[in-house]
Length: 423
Image 1 (tube, rainbow, N blue to C red):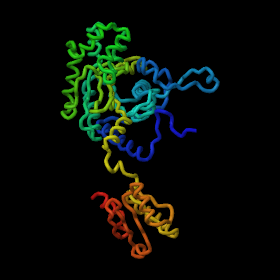
Image 2 (tube, rainbow, N blue to C red):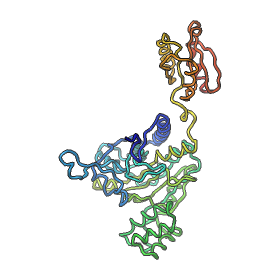
Image 3 (cartoon, rainbow, N blue to C red):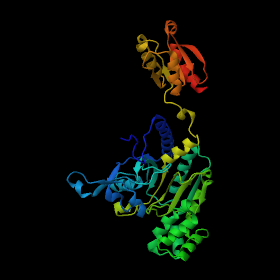
């Protein structure tokens, strides 16, 4: 029997969890600075909630849950694992419309599931880190979201990322000028969304394969380089102008950006990082989605950071601080002989009371083996209490990073370790 997890999923060991918690902590702290509040929704939704919201290709990637009990034999599905966090948010806004503020700003960090083909940085189960603002059509909303996302990435250590910005209304105007039939607009956007992967020629071939005449396809792609005059262009420039300089300097208006989800109605955005295929996240305005549940349109705009891709890139490029890359324990308390077990546990309690993370070696063993264990666990400090130390009321503290060792009064042990940590 294989012990591997299902394809496209992973087990998370302690080092993995520390990296994830670090990134999530930065995201949460920045988003809360901008006034976004936390929200969580169930792992699965009624299937009709999800179907028809993500376009042709998105529907194929929804993990369906078969009916249970006496209905199991039908092979029909009535539930599905959530595909993203945006559609559940739209449902929540419709459900709690009388309890939420007029301008509702929320962030949500939870796993989603897609029946996609696994690849490096692409999984079937993964976390999304969403931030959304509901209730206003003002370009301040886009500027606020982009500023928050840019601050998250800068805080994490990304220095050369770009924010690609476009508008679905401008893409529609280009399609109309090119003569693409309205029935094929969705097909054209799906093809354009693959530009980074298959190039201009690949997109043109796919457009033709989707029944768009070759001449029309060629005109469509040429208009992306020289677009018609459209109010959406002025709107994009207004968004950039409202962003703080540090954020605005990273924005590039890119008319080839499409984003495949069908619910976008206005500005769309995506993060590009040098030497990285794909993006670290994306989003846009979706003023009609909530109306599918509520019966009236509600303005909305959001952005989703891909936690898994961020962690993969940061790990590959050595971007995590040493405190995160190291172990999760500050001090190992050693045991000389079985009679010292109670005292070792008492010392550990004293050190923990000062905020240190402490592990007690569970067996009486040679000190060399205990030091080797601490080194293998990346535990920087070892506390030793032998007969001589006990008689003097001392603790010997060894810093495994420098090799320095010194006796310290037991009452001062925690203070000394903290001092050594910070030097």
